[in-house]
Image (tube, rainbow, N blue to C red; front, side, top):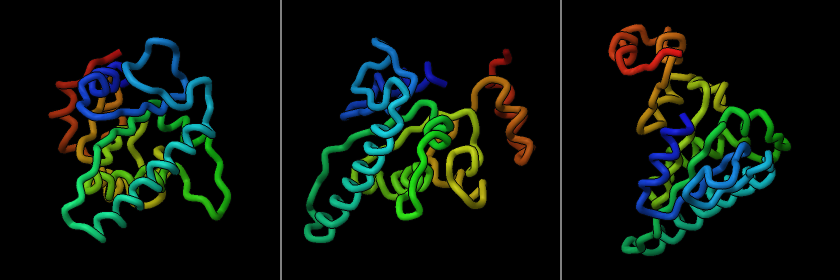
Length: 168
């Protein structure tokens, strides 16, 4: 998953920031936030991105011709991020911020790419129906043995994905 994310990030045409608590020098071809398990910096970047989304929405409300410089927020180890960032009851969880960026971001030039070991709403730090949650993503790429093991709730897709997977 990390290798695939590195290839995607390297080919992005716009500004890109990677949230990676397990970063090391030379791992990413762009700016990294949160290396050394700095989950506070990662959460702050999510909040700032959500604030930028709100700012852009307000600007668009005032001027339909406004255009925004696109940027991408990419996240490796999303499961670690959602399990390690604790928030107060007045703060949005990382999963809620991610969903907001996924659902609304592309309208305002903000892309979110996440990598994780799971694809359920709960494993990605969100609540609710997993099928509705999955609908928020433009793409879901399954790698390795994960394909057959995790898609039990969608058996009609397993044969198609299984031939793409790489077993351990």
